[in-house]
Image 1 (cartoon, rainbow, N blue to C red):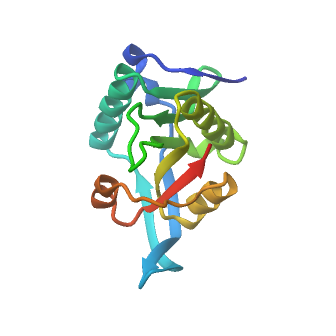
Image 2 (tube, rainbow, N blue to C red; image 1 turned 90 degrees about the horizontal axis):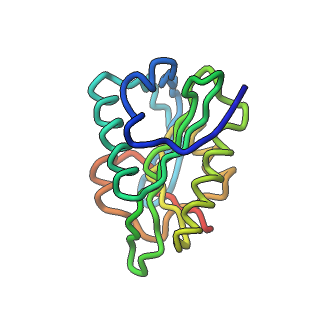
Length: 176
């Protein structure tokens, strides 16, 4: 049975991710060249290392601790998807809240979980006075197709910290 709920800071640990598969075979990615977006061959496999899990766990714990939103999907009591939104507004008009993570386990993709998680993030951000969600989005063609289907477009303002951390990500926003 598929259920959704907020995560508590103390339950975000390595054990939570034991049945979560972060694996994505990427063949094509969006790249901005001379001010124009194009799709290019850029094959790689995206998987998390133990160091990635450690960083993720600390980030999600801090998000909850600082009043942000961490919401998860469970199938038979096993984590199968999650989304997080930071609590600090930013941008020239302080109109953005940052969608910091959204992932669905490889074994549960294409079942509407990502859409449900994204919509929950939008609702939470809107209830916390944001006008837009900001997404530093993975550039894989499949990831971009998902974000565009959710109404995301290229961000009017780029968050420089995101650009520096992930230079190949597409900086996007979604109106709330």
